[in-house]
Every structure is written in structure tokens, then in C-alpha cells.
Image 1 (tube, one colour):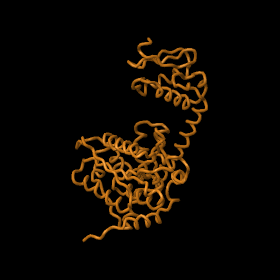
Image 2: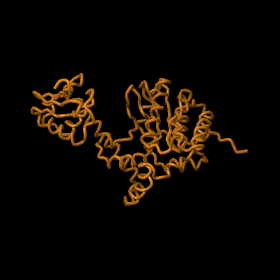
Image 3: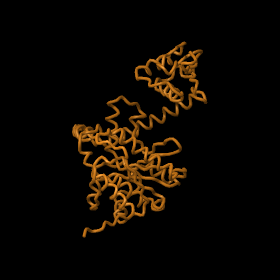
Image 4: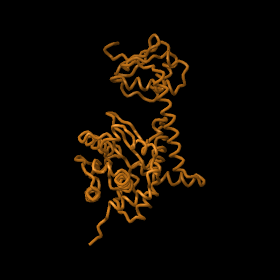
Length: 344
């Protein structure tokens, strides 16, 4: 008979090897703070892989008072047959041993060739439903430093600004006062795997992660090793993590600048172009983007279209800019407003 794993003891030992100061300081400060999300129940996304297993064990050991209110969420994508079912059973056993509530869900309409984006969308839809059902505001996620580098390279390829390049954030504040919490961003994947292996901990491996079917996998297996090897002895992963921190600082500063300018009316319908005159383009760009988001329906404006509208806002002169079937963006007397088709 196989030896029964003592998961509580393993959680304690892992917490000794990864003490609280080893986790992201912003997360530790938040977890010990007085916000409603921090003081309430927590949920953790638990796939059964090395990262999410380490996260669950560390949460159980470092915040034992939260254990009774901790909810582990596992989503079965049903893309790997029996292996997917075995993942769910493994996760349920670990949670039972730790005294953590477990809730599983599955993709009823799963397709064998589903895209990475589709799988992520249905997984997070399940998370959001369960968070709402259990009235939980905090979702803990097991992203680590390798995820930072992969995300950075992927988003550079598509031309993201500081907001996109600052992902994944240790604390990501969402709608409905919810927050996504990522304490492992100070750790590398190799550190987590080596530490778990040294403790004799078993976890579930998703063999699809070793394929090149998804963009992130191609970045992980083909690009990241070459990039780190070409970094001439520098710790490229730590460098990417530090760049992410700096980008987040810049992004927060720009958002605060946009707030201070107060160019958008309270109802979001008017953008005072005069207030933006002479300000850095980054501030004007963010103000325009906020205004667009606040409108009911401005269509799917292309990057080129946005750039043209941005130039018009910077000029500040009378402009009628077509947003396709949605309507018009109109600059009149120093104010940008949206006119739906019925108003033409």
C-alpha cells in the first residue's frame, strides 16, 4: 500500500523554506491589512500543478486562521480524458487532508482543439460564478516569475503599453471590489519545482504544457531559454520581474495624473479637450481611452483609428470623426462628445 501523504506537515515544511518575506511584499501587506477583501474569505485557483499546489500549501501554513474560510476552486477543462479526471480527484484529496473546502467545475461543451483563450475564458467564468455564490472577493493565483517574462514577451509582440506590460500584478483590483492576488511573483518556477521535489511532494503535470500548441508554450519552450541564455550571466527572469515593478509604478503614476487633470465629466459623456492642451501624449491618450470606455457603444476602434482621433484631440479644433456604424466623435468648442447615428 502506498504511503499516505501528510499534507499538513508538508505545508508547514514548505512555509519554513518559503517564509512570508519570500513572498511578494505587497501581497503580504495586503493580506495583513484591514480591507474587506483581505478580512473576508479567500479563494484559490487550484489546478493541481506545482505552482498552484505550492500556493495552496503556503496559504494553509502562513495564514492558518483563514484555512477554515479558504475555498479551493478547480476547473476541469475535460481536454485530457482520464488525466483531467485524475487531476480533479487529486485536488479534492489534498484539500480534504488540509481541511480546505473544495469546489470543482467542468467544461460541459469542451472541444479537443479549443484555443488557449477559450479555455481561459470558461475557467475564469467558473471562478467568478463561485466567487459570487460564496461572496468571496479575493482570488489567489499561482503565477510566478517565469509567467512575468512570458507575458512581457508576448505583450511586447502585440505592442502593449505600461498597463499591459505591468501584468501579472501582485494585486489586481477588479470590478465588484474583487482582487486577484499573486504572492509567488518573487519566485521562479525552477525554485518552486526543486523545493517541492526536495520535500518529496507529488503534483499533477499537464502534458499539454509540453506541446507547442499554444503561444505561451511556444514562448516558454522556444524563446525564454534562448533569451535567458543570451543574457550574459544576468538573471533575466529577475530582471523582467523588476521591470514589471517599475512599469507598474509608472502606470499608477500616469493614472493618478489623469485623475488629477479631471478632463472627463462625472457622467463620462464629455471630455474637456482644453484641459489636456500641452500635456504629455501619455496623459492625453489615457484620458481619451477612458472617455471611449465610458461611452455606451463606440464600436471596435482600430489602433490606427484611435491614433487619428488622438491627434484630433491634441489639436483641439472642430472635428467630426466617424466611429463607423456606432456614430461620431465630435469636438466642438473644446469638448469631445459622442453622437449616436440617430443624432446625425
